[in-house]
Image 1 (spheres, rainbow over the protein chains, first blue to last red):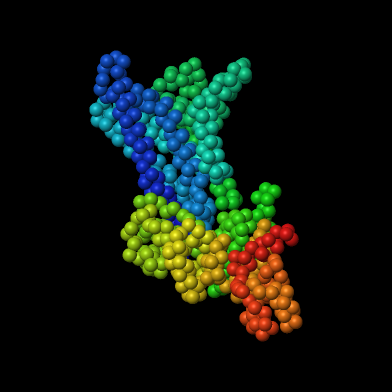
Image 2 (cartoon, chains in turn cyan, red):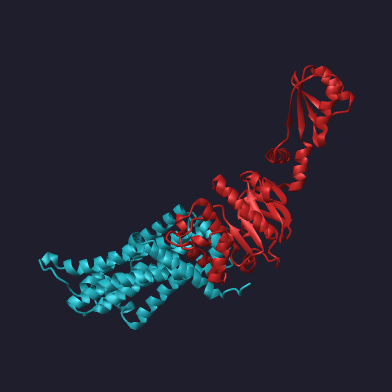
Length: 280
Length: 302
């Protein structure tokens, strides 16, 4: 009998398979194409209202793109994670009946899908970004790079959350429903809740409410970090002074990134625990 | 090769497996049969490490490891009822993935394909294979690394008769090679052809655990001769006088217990007594009927 592959080697085998499957599914290419089209479209038509057509620089593109990205990327990650486990049927049973641990399977799935997401986003943002840079110059590219990076982290974070949801609800319909609810909460309902909270806690310093609220919702955190990276903190409204104070410096950015990393690791750890203990 | 002691598994209020114990010896072909909801799949999933038991002890493979231990599953190959391999992959690529999980290379892939007769189709897309060939590919996957134990979950349930026959032939070959096989099935014809012992599960409990030879003996002992004599009263008197066990069936027929050639002796006795016989028919229960009798008996007792 051949020696058993090491734990990391087994996880890598699963990761390669997941990566290949995700790319073969083709919709990830559609995702990449969509982002390229968005980058180019927003750059080209951004000044259409002033009857000026032509490529414009990264600052305006980044801010326009940000809202779409923060809408689409979490949904993509969540669905990618959910469908990788939930409703897996005999295929998943067959994989789990192989001489690999469940932790290796879950780690492999995360790594493979995270790599596929990274490739899709690199192609999508990178392709469009290069065209914009060649035509309009690389001025204020820092914000665009920040958006690309934060979008990537947000994709991984939502992928980990999707895996966690699927580990808890292996039924695909239930898992999809839970994922969609969470997505709606993150991108739509959360801001209303925070607004309500600030109204309720009138008299309490704004940052005492805003700061924890921002840390809890990764979508909002990514939005603030990107906006500040572009140098358009004023767009954040009357709270901008507080937000610039909180996240404007290197320490704030580091804290934001650390929180996003934690919000990726935590659901992944929960997913691993539930995945290991569940009957399949 | 498999040891199960007092295995119990509950899903909420439902007890899927209730205090089940059995052992499978090395080189044995062991069948797990039972009606739907009997606990076959749950038992199988416990053996594969997919489901954790609520109580009891389970050890699989020559090293006697618990199924949750990945090392135990190195000694085990699993063939599911039906699995869809990823579209776009060749047969060799599909096997390559499972081989890599076991730390095996191309040589193992080629050997497994040759063993199930798919060597010439290695470059074919797996999604283009017929149902029978797909199941062969699944078997090749299970044979990677030459595990001592094969676990098969209703492997021919979705195959046509020809593919079923071919697949069973492969299983017979593996049995001759000394593999330990655990076969979960509701098709008695399949079990009859290859199994040494049969565990009948009903309601999560062991209804019977018998050697197939014993089941066949039971089948023979339950053989009856149904005779339609010209005069049933005269026939009954003649049979009683000669010590045959029989019963009247309606007004016109007599059913005689006919194991070990007793049926023919009874016919001869009737002829010697001058009782005319209009027609006769030998009735032997199928294994299916014996199985159903066990199931019904267990349900009555349960």
